[in-house]
Image 1 (tube, rainbow, N blue to C red):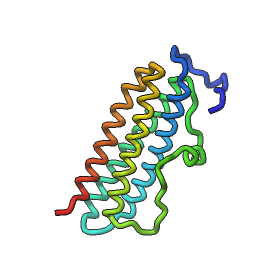
Image 2: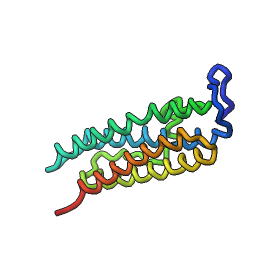
Image 3: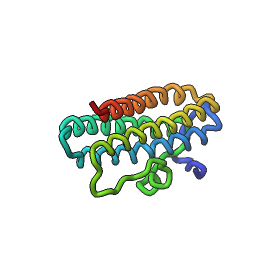
Image 4: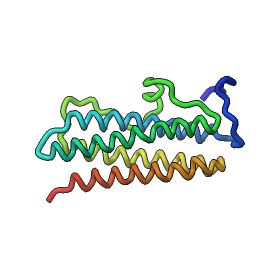
Length: 163
């Protein structure tokens, strides 16, 4: 990240927050990538469980999108800048896009489950960086984001069980 423009400077008593902001921005990029993938699968799911999966994925996408503003605002509160474009997201995301013309429902659920667990890994990086920077607010709020992602992974796992 480049030095912050003075016009965007934010008063904070925190120092050494660049690593926190970098971890938050990486998680934010992953949230946007996961949001779009979840919406893509929501729009294109097919099969005997269509309605259940369609509604589940819509709920999950809304939850993922809902956390993005909190993440970006946390970056700004630490005196840093956040994502600016789709290109910025693509450079930072670790969640891989899925551009296939067709994905069967079971594969959709499995892929999204793994992606949510990857998001949890990123949130743990945020937690470690926040703790190292003594950023209590970020350290506390990331616990909620982690819990939500773990719950999404659990729901996707349970929805994909056979029998």
